[in-house]
Image (cartoon, rainbow, N blue to C red):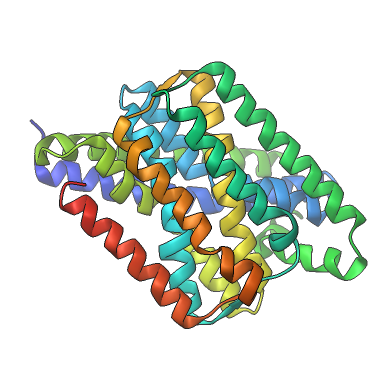
Length: 324
């Protein structure tokens, strides 16, 4: 039996490493891409979008390979729920967020479709390698189409995409490629260590508290791995980069569902808890449907809507705390 202090320290250290190294990974990956001559559209819609989901990827992969598949799947589902309710709601409370552009045309419909497909393919209680491969192929298709659409868009939209490139990447790009690759490798190593610490602490806490790994994955692990999205969304909203705020969250949900479950399922088929498919994935789909009027009718997330989203997330947490 491990002490509470050790478990708490492992969770705290894991979250800190995941947050810091995830941010560093995005910066170094974007700088390497810029140095290689890739366009802001490619960097923003693929590398940065995937990079912000790196903490979830490493945690889910580590949990699955360590024999904690409930944490692996619940982390993805819980992160997606938190992104569309807690994080989007908090950002809207700071400043109302207009919605337009690619979010309306492509990103939101694809996210809604990916949430529905995830639920359908997991209802048999298992995500096998064939289904995981389909998820990965869908991620590649989405990224490729997004980049193509960005290149065909009008010039003003192309300039907007430059905001997706982290400012720090501009300075890092001037450094030698060897240093950039070393920084990239160090960031990945930090994510591996952080994921191991978080999974160790979370699974130990679940056993000590007598709660399921599913609940721990949906709450502590999911919110912890979503911290980079929270920071990025609020900062984007405050800087007036409204489309980036919503695009980042929607893109993260797409990568979480398709890319992370795809990679994790290819490494080892994932058994899916009946409670996850019977309740939590429906909540994930419901959260995606909840913002539909904001995307297509109001075209904005107001402070009132943000309050509703946060209240919905807190209600879901209360249900989990009550044993739901």
